[in-house]
Length: 129
Image (tube, rainbow, N blue to C red; front, side):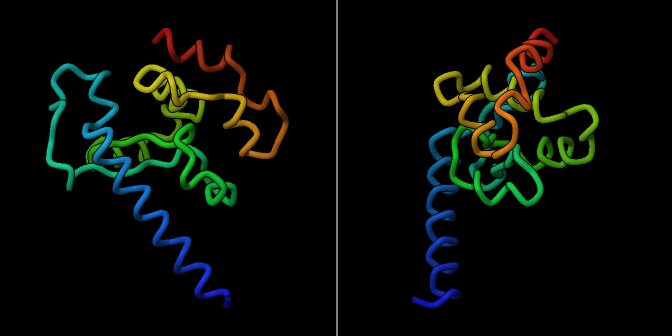
């Protein structure tokens, strides 16, 4: 199997995962933080946000512990306000909206860096806000 074929298969699998995740969640997960935000909206306005950035992002494409579902507006806000939304804050939101899928241990393992790169204390600091 050639490199292009493997990449096409991986991309198709990712698209299926992404579409299923959006349907399953069915709402902007940042809506919980803003009472004026519309909770339900057309699925076409929802996007997958990958918490893990840079070269390591590829490892987390289909990992539920590293993904948020956001509307277009919130997704843009998050990307333009990165100083206000560091990884720990995004993980705190994930822990709040989908606690069963939150796994800091798995997230840090995906990052392939130090096991305590982000700690529960970092998450708790944002969870209290």
